[in-house]
Image 1: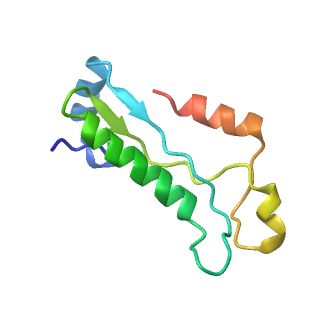
Image 2: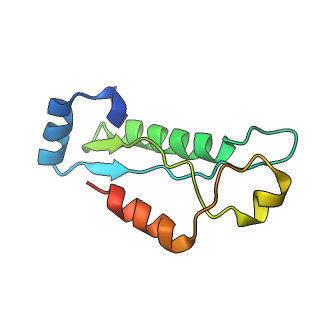
Image 3: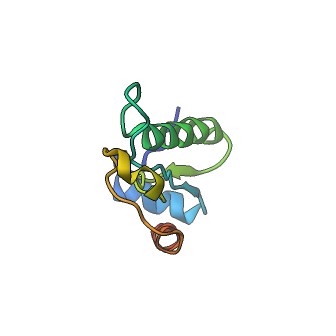
Amino acid sequence: MNEVQWNRLTAAQLRDLAARDAVVLLPVGATEQHGPHLPTGVDDFLAAEVCRRAAELASEHIGVVVTPSVPTGLSEHHMAFGGTSRSVCPRCTRCCVTSAAP
């Protein structure tokens, strides 16, 4: 199985993927409270894991790489409960995601 995580690849491997027009997946998941039964990073963990698994399956057929995740989102509705790291507006989220695209 091919390595698909950006931060586990060398610069030369990333240049090779770029030269092949590899697909780049950017996991985005907020860090926010989910009650007493789940960790605050569950959205981030799930987004990263879904991207990693999808990339591993796809890497047998195409070039694909998963960037480190963006652990923020629109979480204002969680702020009163504590445990939420930060909330960003939709415009800022869009800017962050489009700026991260290589």
